[in-house]
Length: 266
Image (cartoon, rainbow, N blue to C red; front, side):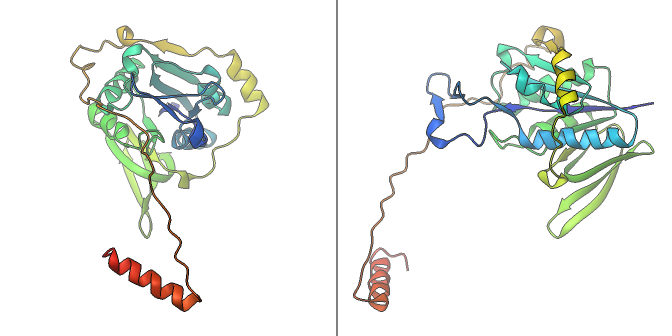
């Protein structure tokens, strides 16, 4: 029997976007993606796809990538398919636009996993590069009632168990759990593989499965936000720089020390 793997991936604003291009819509309290800078698949989630593909390289496995959001750039979200994933499921609905609310995202993803008919292993990136909350994988594991191992740098499946190398301050720990289970991976896993030309051509022919709230059988309580965002803004920098000069290095140092003492910094 093939190992049934789900990878949870998120479309995010390109973290390499120039600061000058970063904009926030004050009405919707959302980051505005510039038209000339496309979004990307979250970097840690690409590591998760790579971890799944390494398992598939070693044994028979089926990889389904799931992502949730209000809108998607298909060319971007098809990247896991071009890398070698088998299926792509997009949870697309205006109700899914509140990406800061981890509870809502957890309910959507867990419902999608159940609708797919079960799994052996769920692999997630350690966190998303937009909010950096690292809450969703833990919530999905809790909702589905499965073991969760975080911060993995190597993932193997053997004898109905997942065996991982988990990052530790002084190296790594070897941890195992019975399947089904959920693991999160970090960039220490290694560079994700580049899509091949054959993979890119195959991905263009695949159509993702698209589900809305109506397809996931979610109750109104599950769709009720738990977090209210009151404000989102770019911090203003008003720092001033003062140059302290002296007759020589020793005089400059003395004047600097006096100024720091006057400001009660030393």
